[in-house]
Length: 68
Image 1 (cartoon, rainbow, N blue to C red):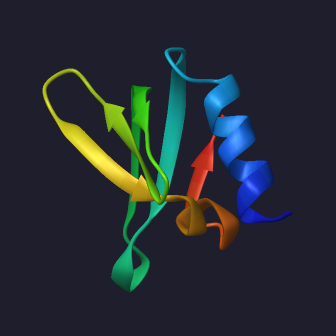
Image 2: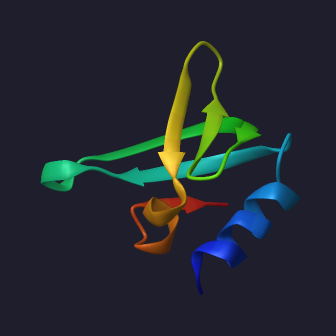
């Protein structure tokens, strides 16, 4: 899989509620539900109930973020 395919998939699930699993540093895992509200050239924005978070497409590529 490459960055262009990931961008296309992100565009396809935009504005849909999804479950996100973030593999952080020091083996910390964060899970939350959110909606991908915006996508740009290098990042996409996920809005949760009260917070907006941005992630890069490369995070998805290297499996730091799982979207289901």
